[in-house]
Length: 120
Image (cartoon, rainbow, N blue to C red; front, side, top):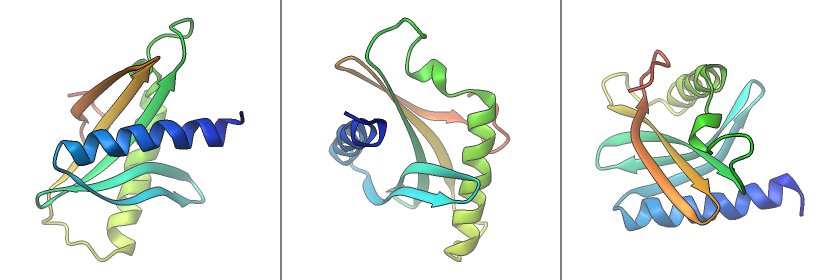
């Protein structure tokens, strides 16, 4: 199975988890030339950008450990463009969450990092 199909399957799991938690998924796999955001959701009036990572085993560390500083910066850059291109005012609350899937265990980190890329 290729990585795109595998990633899509685990993003499905993450979307189900988010909707079961009361969020509304509004877009998946938002791509621009410089990067991608796995899931864009609404949690009330907050726009939530969600990174999904999967690890079948822990040889390379946990799924959440794979969200590096460089990846966080890329997500923030793409999120800024998303907000701009969708005419979302700067006054709207924004949050960056992560869903890590290690084997069959789903871990969710709300406010995983801030708009400067610092881990919360």
